[in-house]
Length: 570
Image (tube, rainbow, N blue to C red):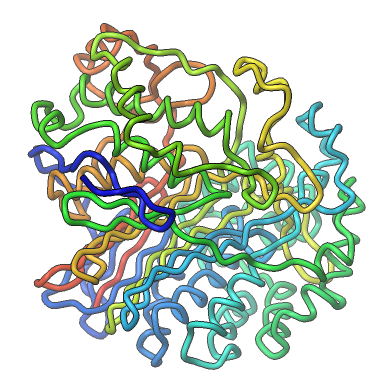
């Protein structure tokens, strides 16, 4: 039985998954230039003996990531370039005004590295005001945290990249200034209710709502203001953003909408190196996200609940399979609310939460014919974007970036074009922990604290090499989605193409006990209901997972069709 240590969270059980019916995916686009296979919206990429791969939620970002590899950059250079481009072409999901997490694998040292560049609460945060959320539209910058995106990307590239910072950043500036086609996902967001408040911001409106009308899918948009900001960042680094006139512009924008952002908050911001959660089972080493993301705890607790033998008796995506996984996930989500928060502010024993004896005790209360209630609480996380890159040396970069809700706080700097996040909305209200007998939440707002996240970049390593990598977007759905696809790959052997088209379920934090994707068969819903699940169909699934698999035949990548993602291999 593997031992649990501070750097290696061994599991008492070995896991694999059961055989499953292979699912066909939607069609994908034909070969593009240079002999590459280009994933169409929702497509995948596959090529014989491919050595490199890029998968993101936007075709332009994917193309630019691959171009960076072709120019001599490594996985880190490529993911930084793709992330910056994503902030231009997918600003509803990401951008310089947000933050995120990165998980790297360094092939030469066989070493995983985690960088936390999550947003932090300003020193002058009004914690009491967060109990009365939602904020009034005119005070929406109360939820804006100190942006960590640029500081994180800058540290990643300078510590682990190969090329000049200016060369990595300049393509994003060029795209912002010369224009880009609005993607199907962004086009749908612009027509959604989420965009109404964003359209009231003069800077966002000038780019995406000229003459009061949303730019249609496929039409060109330009963001010259943001382009100029990126040009300066390319030449001068992060300094103007955190201690210069760009910082002043962001502070002015935040204060105009009730925010507390101050010059000292930006000047003092630092990304944090973290130790990844390390799970060992079935000969695989799984590295996933530590606090202040709850994602790795959800993955670890869910995997630790079942043995291979138990799962082999269940058909994949059957009612009993989904129900049992959901029960384990509900336990993990309950732990999230009761115990998890910013590790720099709370003493949290993650090893104890993942202890095999504790998981076994919980497992004894799980029944295939009964559903346990999860005390409900409200939590919103939406606007995220996940990116994956594998380079020819075997380095892997997995990065999730976010501004939280669509277009974040829906406020942009007048002079910079940077859209501010509303990430502080991820702090938990005190009333939402009352059902657990808590007088205060470990995820409560405090000056300098990082709100708990669901982002779950994950790497699977065997014999010192990454064999599988994945991560997703979609807020609270991220960790449960990643867990489902992780099992489907390592236990069932599904291909990346099959994984991203696999029907998924979700465990919501309020309302019904289980959500299934539209089109789920009536027999499945009836079976779940018989087991005590209160089932509801999702009107739409706002989540997406990107995956890359590496084996003797080469690299295979796939991007989720739910957000019209794109994958390229070469």
